[in-house]
Length: 173
Image 1 (cartoon, rainbow, N blue to C red):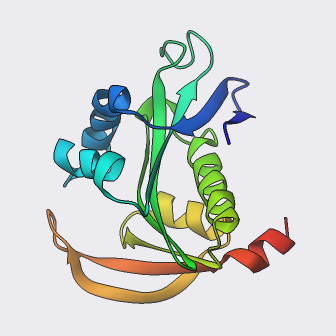
Image 2: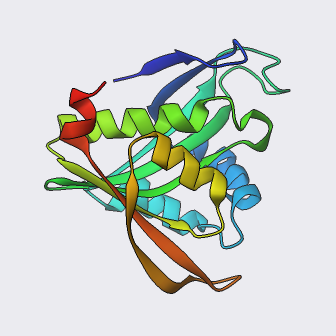
């Protein structure tokens, strides 16, 4: 189910399944985005060893998009579909193209794919201090479910558990 969108800057992205060839670009974005980044082995496990896992990348479709080459990975989303639940595991966007709709499209794409695979609800955890991500998820239809004290390390911080009814969200689109 490849997906092409046009973002606010009139550049285009294409969403497709990640491959091992994307790993280095994914790791670069991961390391610039998180204080405790996933390791290469963690991404390999998502690509190879987990039947519930889905890892998708957003690619630039033209040269010069924020200094990026055509086909370069500009973001990714990792999610699991386990029975009726879609669980967002990881999402990040290249710093130079943030706030241009890439993350929103990755969330929308993963949610639609989860619904197609039978998920009725979506859940995720986000750092309490990550205002941009919390705002993104709220705009996508997620709401606050609970807090998990000292969930994150480096620095130690609470997680906000958020959820969304995917069937309700689909009927309002």
